Amino acid sequence: MAPTTRSQSAKMKKPASNILQPSKVNKRSRPRTRVASRKPTKSKNLNGSQQISRLKPPRGRTYPLKHLENGLVSMETTPDYLVETIQKNATDSPLLRLPAEIRNTIFRYAVGGNKIRIRRAVVYRTSKKWRENSNLLWHGRADHLDDRRFKDQGTAFHLPEVCRQIYAETATLGYATNIFILPYTQGLHQYFDEHRSNGRQLLDTICL
Image 1 (spheres, one colour):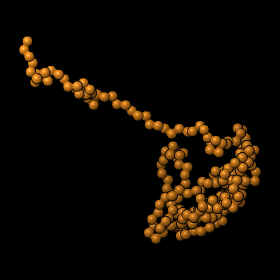
Image 2: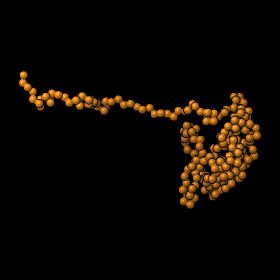
Image 3: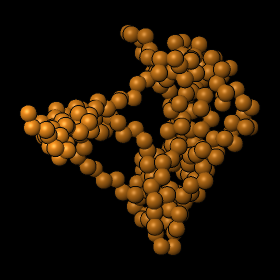
Image 4: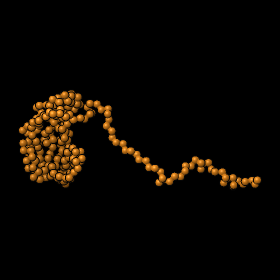
């Protein structure tokens, strides 16, 4: 038997590195995996002050609203199904249990100090879902009156909708602590036509 040379033995032995190398797989043949997006889940460990719920009147009973001469809703009588909740809010809420002077200062900082430009209402065709989700009220805030540059900023005009006590304390605060800018006199007449009873009493400062 003929002896093998060193070059022939090297060809016969496979390098150890080839054994550990992964096999080549076509990238197109690999199955694609989809990563499911995480949806925000509501935390179940919420205390009573963090749970948001709107109380509904008992079935079959009606509670008519009484409006005052200035157009506001009367707070003289409280529906019986709201008495317990109102008393609990007054004692448990960190905001409502503050002294009235401090609450009024907080409400003024949250609502007032803006220059609100009233524009003409334009009706667009929008979907029902968009109308249901658009619960925020937006006004144009004029930061530079000289060059008429405006930027949209959310306002706190929905603050009175939180509860009855906040409504009683802030229903007219947004009109008395802001400056309303009307670029045309037609908007002023339209506002007073729609708010004949309390239009002149609510507004404190108007800029034309």
